[in-house]
Image 1 (cartoon, rainbow, N blue to C red):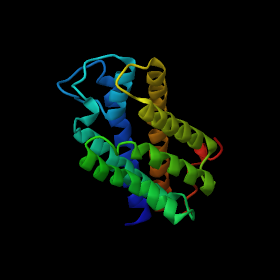
Image 2: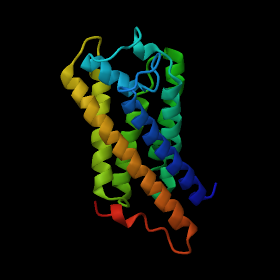
Image 3: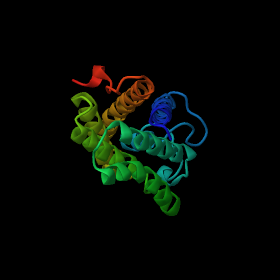
Image 4: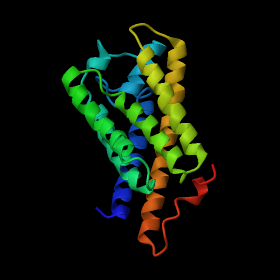
Length: 208
C-alpha cells in the first residue's frame, strides 16, 4: 500500500478512535440499554466511581465496541510506523500487533486483552521518542495517558475507589487528545507524501 494511502487510512482510524471515546463520555449522560456506547474504560471509571447502572460483572460482557477500538488502534499504529522512519521494526510490529493479539485474548478469556491498547500505546510513544521526528508534546501525552489507564485497569476491583476513578478519568481525557494528535500526524504525513516535496512531518508538532 502506498505510504500516503496507508497514512490516510491510519489517520481516519485514529479519528474514529477519538469519536468512539467521545461517544463513551457522552454515554454517561445519555444512558442506553446494556452497555450502550460505553467502552471498557468508561466501565472502569464507573466501577471505581460507584456511579451509574451497570450490568452484573460488566467487564465480562462482550462488547463489540471494545473490539472495534482494538482494531482501529491496531490500524492507526500500523500506519504510523512508516511515518516514524527507521526505528525498530520489532517494536513497530509489537505496537501494531498488540491490539490484535488483545482481541484473541479477549475472545478466549471474555475479560482480559483490552489493556493491550495501553501496552501498544506505551510502545508507540517510545518509538516516537526514538524516531526524534515528532515533538515532545505527543510523547508526554501518550506516555501519561496509557500509563494512567494501565494503572487504573490493574487497580480496579469490585468496590468503588474514587482515587482510581480520577486516574482513569484523567488518562481517558489524555487518550482522546493522544489519538487526535496521532490523527493529525498521520493525515499531515499523508498530504506531504502526496506532494512533490519530501515529507516534513508536521512542523506544528515538531518542537512541542
